[in-house]
Amino acid sequence: MPGGRYTLAGYESWLGHDALYSEPEERPHPVMAFVAAQRGLGVTVAELFRMWGTEMSDGPMLTESTLEFPGEFRADTEYDVRGTVTSVVRKSGRTLGVFDLVTARFEVVEPGGDTPVAVVTNTYALPRREATE
Amino acid sequence: MSADEILPEWALAEVDPEKMKVLALLLADPNPLHFDPAVAPRLGVAERPVNQGPSNMAMLVNLLRAAYPRGRLRRLTVQLRGSVVAGQSVRATGRVTGRERQGATETVRCEVALEVDGGRLVLSGEAEVEVPVVASG
Image (cartoon, rainbow over all chains, first blue to last red; front, side, top):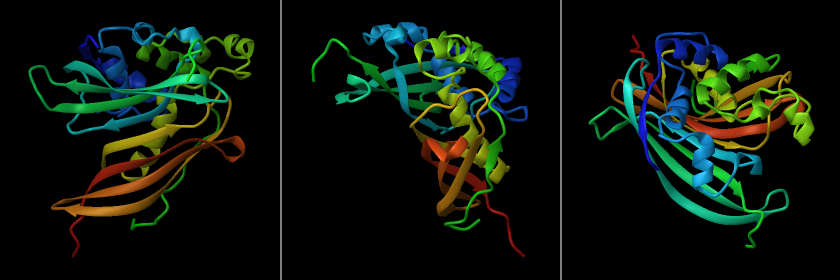
C-alpha cells in the first residue's frame, strides 16, 4: 500500500470524542487511531478496496479489528502511516458466497521513527461474486 | 477488580444518526449506509442508517475507560458479528479474565461484548488495559 501522512487536528479529536459517545479531553479517543490508519494511508477507502479488486457497491465488510498502542497517539502531531497486507484467505459462505478474507496491518509511526505509536490490524471480507472456491 | 470480576456496564439508550454523519467525515468514509437514511432501506439492509464499525468498537473502549479511568488501553481485538442501526439501544459488558503485575503497573485482561436491543450480540472481543498500581498502606 502506498502509505502517507496524517495529523489529527485538535478540533477533529474533540469531534471524534463527541461522535464516539465520549467526553472530550486532551488525549484523542483510542478509536481515532483507526481514523488515522484509514486517512493516512495515501489512498481513499474506495481506492483501497479497488486495489483489492472490490468496489464499495460490492459490500466489503470489516469482520475483525485490533487496535494496539505501543506508544501514545496524540492530536496535532504528524505521523507516517504504513500499510501491508499480511494474509489473504479464500472462503465461501451462505450469505456472501465466495469471498476473500484480507488482513491488513496499518502502522502509525512518528516521522523518522521505527516503533509505531499505534497499530491497527483489520480483516475485511471482500465478496468475489465471479469466483468459485 | 480481581479476575472474573464483572466490569460496570456501559449503556446507550439510542444510537444517534447525527454522530454517524460526523464520523463519516472524520473517517472519509463515503458509504451512504451511514448517513443517507434512504439507502439502507432501499438496499434491504436495515430500516435506518447503519452505525460504523469503529463507532461500535468505541463503545467497548468507553466501557473500559469508565472501568479504568486511570488506565491506558494497550490492545483491543474485536470480531464484528452484526450491525447496529440508528435508534437502537446498546449495552457494553465486560469481565476481567486475568491480571499481570509489572512494577508500578498491572495489565488487566478482559473479555468484552456489545449487544443491541433484545440481547443480540454484535461485537465480541478481548482487551488489555495497563493500570497504575495503587500503593497500599
